[in-house]
Length: 565
Image (cartoon, rainbow, N blue to C red; front, side, top):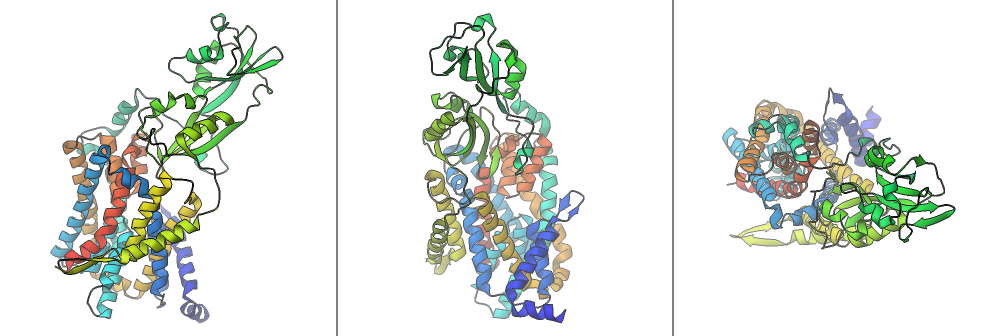
């Protein structure tokens, strides 16, 4: 055992990887339906390993924190700039009210109970599930004109308060928003969701398709061959056939007349006994396929190359276009939308959903048709494992330089710091990627590494540094922090719900999604969607999530400044 301890002290990089491994293991443990999550798991693992008094160079922590912040900005950049448009004002206003409430409530409790600024910052970070506050507040404390020992003690108090309040706050909010939130607005959540989708046709894509190597047996679209026997269809061209259904999109990709194949562009008029290949949603085939005639097996006719392609929306003409309007375009012929993703969140595929530049459309259809639609909509985002590291490296470098610039306000020098600059440049570069997607690609697996592993490495190192003093700090403030963390997490969201519903007159489903986004709690959004049995709350999530990430991150140094007054 002494060999292992000595190895960890002399080779601190081993301690970091041990911390991350233990942290992910702890984070996966489930207590009923509840789990700690990998972030808290890495913090606790860091505290545990940190009892061995292991010293980690501060630069290592900064590297992972900057990488995490740049990636956070990259993900939310398009929606952050989207919030500057007038149509996003209600969601932006709700987010600002909620986030300002978070800051003021944390400050008030800290002043009333005599918490030091490190504990206050940990309360803010944990109660509102914003781990970045640990870094930004810690950097602000390090710049204070205080003895080194006092600064170190204050910084070490941040993860103590964070660990306690995060567990209390996140658990409470995942229950509070879907269960109590609707009662505050006087609605039944499921009834409201049913009413919102009553006249709309929703995409029912199964969750099985979300796992690599597994697809859903419930197919959204299908191409089938039918022999034409309905006398009312005889003598009509392909275009006339496709125009007959008034409420369904069906496309005849090609057909067979005797031994001759004809495509959809021909002027061939359908005769009795012709076989046509029809592409439509699965339920249309099931309900109305026999209107044409009997289904037949014709492998040669159905040998049509079908492509599934992700396309990033870059067209300014299509910005703010509804999916119903999109489907009416000539370029959309023969193409179906399987999924719509915005900032990594799946949006409801319903006619009234409006597109934003930077959205990712998963299109399905014949190869030529999908390629034609992609050229009009934006940029074909074909999968590749490569990350544009020129983009990432220069982004963090330029952001760091920008963040180091200072401005004197009333004689006090203010600066974003290198980490704040990385976040800012991530926002800008993320927006540039959405507008000009031919450069700056970071694949989803790489985003997960930069975002999740970067944050967990940073949090783990924080835990390693705080380890020796963690237990003493927990004994001193743990009991009061449980109650304070609970109230501090629930009160701002109560204010946000009431403000959004009764002042801004927002749709209740959007209000709940916006509160989950403003509090940066994805688990709460999932809980709301599960309770509502609808994906509509996601429409209110992305813009508040973008703004909430920025404001809550910025509150770290703001809170420290207010605590010094």
